[in-house]
Structures are given as structure tokens and as C-alpha cells.
Image (cartoon, rainbow, N blue to C red; front, top):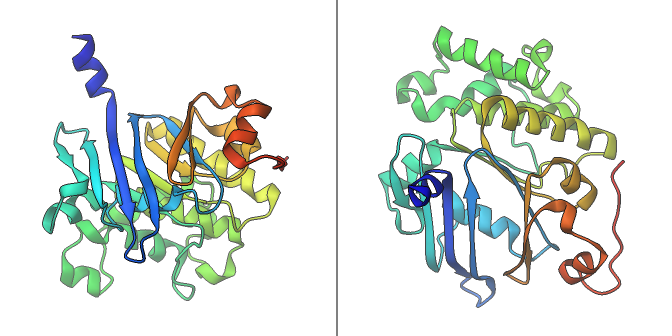
Length: 267
């Protein structure tokens, strides 16, 4: 029974994940770890450590060279993302929201329209091409804009918003997919320190209020310690740490980031 419960509590099992690019660069070298349902997992490491590659393998923007990514959806379906093809990849992507460092909004379109585009995967093609969304779609989009504290900007053009506001729109857009997992690749890297905390606060709110599993790549340990429930660290494509953010002391910091590295605090 305990084994079955542990399995049900695990949404992703990454096993011996390898990614080698055509030029011979080995970005991931046999990475293995589990992701628990509902946790806020943060992945840390230097640029080039494999963080972004790993997220892109999880939602199959990149094709893994070898290994397994066992995915268990809330309806009980289990699949190996690494081996998925065709329609199965599209189905998996519909259950995974993705937030990037750059917000990828359409600047001339309204905030509400940008959020609604997140539900295109569940909208009939003709209607989506014509920009026709149901009242239920619009209501849900407004609910997610309220969740990230930006509902008053719904009818502004996206270009009129600050960087932090645009990233919150991107979060709301990802939520309209009603995903099981939210992947965030350096979501605050383009923002000033004060705005970093605003965006991270809303990501934590999404995690806690919706119970959504979040896997987030971050650079700054001060943010990691404040927001992560658990941490995975990569170095040169190898997993070098897995555990509590509070256990990353000076020795672990130097092992992860290299001798002589200095921690930068985001207050």
C-alpha cells in the first residue's frame, strides 16, 4: 500500500535522461529524480548546466537522446514522454503549461486575448482562427487574471504593460490550459529585483491555491530558499544535489556553482 501511495504521489519520474545535440554537446548525462504532485520544485545551476534542456525534454520541445520521463496525469494515465510520438505529444503538451524568460505575448493584442490564446489547444480550429471564444473561456481567463492580480488590465494592449505585468499575463495564459504541471524557465531573469518577488509570489499562489505542480528554473538562491519546497541542482548536465533549499550551505553552494562563486541576493 505504501508503495502504491508513493507512486500516486509522484507525477513525474525522470530516469537516466540523456540529451546529446547533433554537434556532440551532451547537455544531460543520465539525470534521474522524481517530481511530487503539488510541489514547487526549483532547478538550479549555472548557465549551460542543462536546466533549460531538461524542461524542454519534459514537454518534448526537445527529443531526449535516451532515458525515460514517466508522466502520471491526474486521471491516472501513465506514459513515457521520452517515447511519445505524434498525437500523444500534443496531448501531453496540453496538460503542461510553459512560461519562458521572454513573455511571448502578442504586443498589439489585448491582455484578455493573449490569455485566451492559451486555450487554443481545446478550441475548435475554425473558431480559434476567427478569435471566437466562448463565454466560459472568457470567464475562466478573467478568473486567472484575478488570480495573478492583473484583471484591471484585461482590455489594455499587452505592449502597454510593464515586464512584470506581462509575465503575470503569461502565467494566466498558461493556466487556461488547465495544466497538471507548470514549467517555468527562468521566469524572472528579465525582471528587476523588486518585480522578481511579485512574480514569484503569484507563482507560489498558483501552486498553493490550485495545487498545481511547478517545476521552475532559477539562478538566485535567495529566491530559491524563499519559494522552493524542494531543490534539484545540475552541473555540467549531471545532478549534483537533491533536497531541501535550507540544506544548501556554503559548501554546497561552492560545489554547485564552482570554487570562488559569490551568491547574489535578491531582496
